[in-house]
Length: 255
Image (tube, rainbow, N blue to C red; front, top):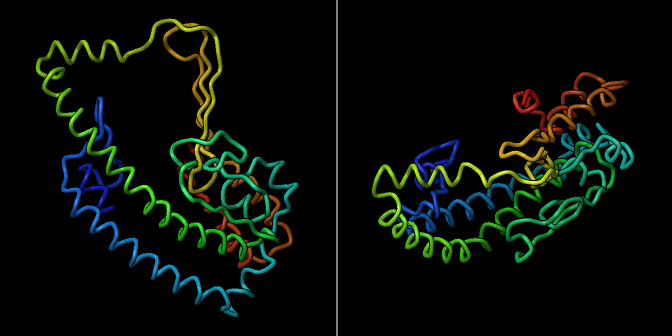
């Protein structure tokens, strides 16, 4: 969060992107140094906690065999992300599994992990391994980000001088970005790999400038549906462990 605030001015809702470029008004060298420090320290802490809990007797007895979901149930409920992979379902939008690949993930050395029983213990193992994998992805993305940032800083400065020098230029820019004119009737859908599963966006166009329907797919709403079957026959302690392992965020469901 500190690094987000340093480069964008916002701690939670970052604003890295600028018109015609990428916000680069920060010290890149100190940013990379601090980022590498966080990656090194974070990977060491997570690895230690992961190894300590992996063979912990209390952890195994509390989570093994609790909240198990079969592949059939996972696919029938439309579950994705870590919960699906913990049950052995091979789905990952970053690799084009179950969705169209996006961004630069295809050029990275990226691994995805699958569980066997789909219980709370498998979900813990898959989450911990993917956290460590995310550190490797960030490390691979740094050189590419460096080259993009250097190009966009020059382009951003150029556009600021040539385009955003008067109120009339700003008004003209936003008039153009308001829309592309009437389009043919069509449907467009896309999704990304979020921390809790596929985050999808659906746009239905009726032939006008504005979309007829806009829908955001929240993976948490799908995950919550599993609780109706996970509650039957379990103790309250097992239910708490299952509920937490599903990573339910009630505020996102309301969306």
